[in-house]
Image (cartoon, rainbow, N blue to C red):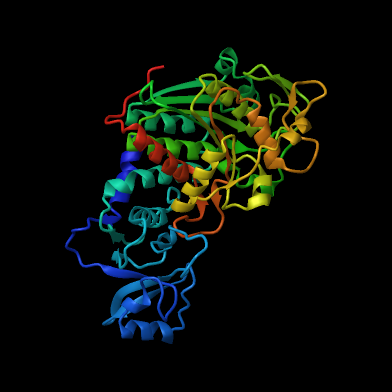
Amino acid sequence: MVNVIDDISQQIAALFLDTKAKQATRPIYPLASLDGGKGGAQELDERHLAWLKATEFRPHPGNWALLPNDGGIGGAVFGVEEQPAAPNPLLPGGLPAVLPAGDYHYAWSPERPDIAALAWALGSYAFRRYQTAEARGAKRLRLPQGVAAGDVVPAAAAVWLARDLINTPANDLGPSELAGAVKSVAAAFGAECEVIAGNDLIARNFPLIHAVGRASTRAPRLIDMTWGEADAPKVTLVGKGICFDTGGLDIKPGSAMVLMKKDMGGAAAALALAIMIMSAGLRVRLRLIIPAAENAISGEALLPGDVVRSRAGLTVEIGNTDAEGRLVLADALALADAEAPDYLMTFATLTGAARVALGPDLPPLFCTDAALAEKLVEAGSRTGDPMWRMPFWHPYDTLLESKIADINNVSPEPFAGAVMAALFLKRFVKNARRYAHFDIYGWTPKPQAGKPFGGEPQCARAVFEYLSSIGETAGQQKKPRAAKR
């Protein structure tokens, strides 16, 4: 994965024309109704408006239509809500997947032109690693006024790389390959990266990570990357890197196992956020920690009922081997928490209960700081990367008690699974000033505007939006430098 960021960035930059480029481009109009509305119908000429009415076009969000022009294509329209309760800034991102090849421009002034341009880049993504068919012709967008490629490409490249990692099947992406991806990113930004693998995890006191991954022929790993000035505010990201999850001896049914290549989606989201932070040169001391393993089955597999001592010293009874993500995260959190970061954040495809509660598109946020939680939710709304706050409901904490150990990794009750998992993780956070946990799905099951089918590093863009706002007040770091431990 040498120069992977540069390669992806070049592909994304090719999706755009400079604002002052001389090429003729086709207009794209948003439409709330054919009688008026948001910057649309009143700007269309009578022929195009008559065409849309004749073809019975309905300007619902997500709908689109081409506009004719002398036997060719004169532009396009797409539907928007006139006064949406929750506007989706990524709506233009549905167009690259459906428009014919050519050059286009937005025929209105977006409220956030940077995000409107980013939507085009995000919607242009396609995972083609295993396809022999050639890609369709190029579709380029003239950058909106006031937006440069540098405002769009870094964030888009971070998302594209994360999507590539999540979409790659486990036979080509195990713990070693995930570590290789992080090391490639670290090299690109001058960051330090240490990887602890196999039995060295025992020697270095990461027993839970080792226990989860020891049954696989591919050794588990602890990936630890640092970047930035040592005296800057400490932002530590921890991402669940289970490269495939069989469920262990509490084996999943085939229908639940088929998508388990995405169980490292938390690691991909954390890595995407780290790339955005380093690309922007935010003045933070960044640390990225990824426990990477494959939850496999063999004679070495973790057994239900086993008791394992964690890095933090707490003993954990294994109530269910399919609740392995919280185990590897516990050791990683103990490492992260030891230096009392200002911000400690976990990203993990952790529970099916989170999907039952909020569905695949709206990840739960658990946060120890009410003001931070509010700002993160607001940032998610602004960027089209939503989340919803859920509670660390402490009365449920007693449900994690074990009769023979300090804590059980699951509750005997079938309720509030996402809350129980969050409470388990919080047991390993003692010193961090603020802790936020994102229980993401990491996957788009149905294509959406700006979010094609497949892997998605949920919450990464929203958190970057928030960190950018506090980073500006702290002052920007002119040149990225490796952290001093």
